[in-house]
Length: 327
Image 1 (cartoon, rainbow, N blue to C red):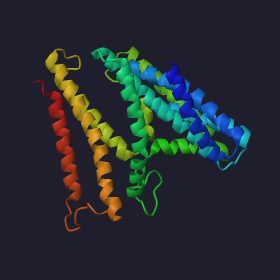
Image 2: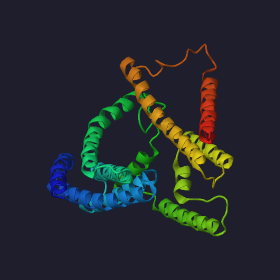
Image 3: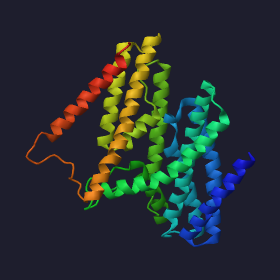
Image 4: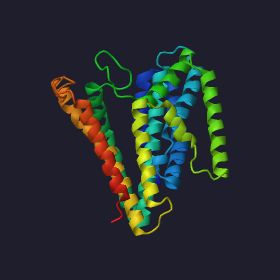
């Protein structure tokens, strides 16, 4: 614990200096640091608990970050005043640190729990987790800059008409800007809260009636705010999982059934990771050549979209086959 506290101080000081460089006000930068420490401690505990309970895939990082930004924005609004140009930036900076802390906390607890199950040495795990966190900090910025220059992120511009969608980041920025600009649609937020309560009530009714399907509030909320081009692949993946479970039997038992389910999960996880890595690799020639069409098929070939659809269909069939293969 002594080393943990020393590390906490060593990593807090440069963040406090960074806040001071942004807002140019010692009082506000100290307040930002305090908010960061308190919110980071509380929400990292929540994140770690959720990761240990149900897995890091159900880590409520988005909700944690939005709550932090909302709370920080309200406090900073009292000190900086309405319309402060640096107010949203300061709130986002606090939220970003808490977001990273919550992500790393959930991931670390997931790793430590797994290590406990297989009999790993805790202190060696902790050393490697620290190395992993430091490595990510060195890698993330260059990768994000690469993606920004190649595709654009968030808002679409003339230079990047097909920018990467960033719905969560856009939502968080809207919350911070809305509070300081006085344009936050509190009515819409209240309506969203009521819809969330209604969905939870419906889900409880479905569970009480032992319906074959449920309406988890997180899944419904994600389906509401994600762009259609992201919701459709998620929906298709859910359909594949549904048909796989029907083929194997939802309550199927035995080592063959478990092996098939695990194979399907690993295959799907590999597709997610592979897509991310390919997006980064493709960005390299785009940035080097300053042309977004460097890897595009010639215009004379009009079957490009059909080819892409055929590849996606083949991958879906392969995923289904992998998930249902018992031996």
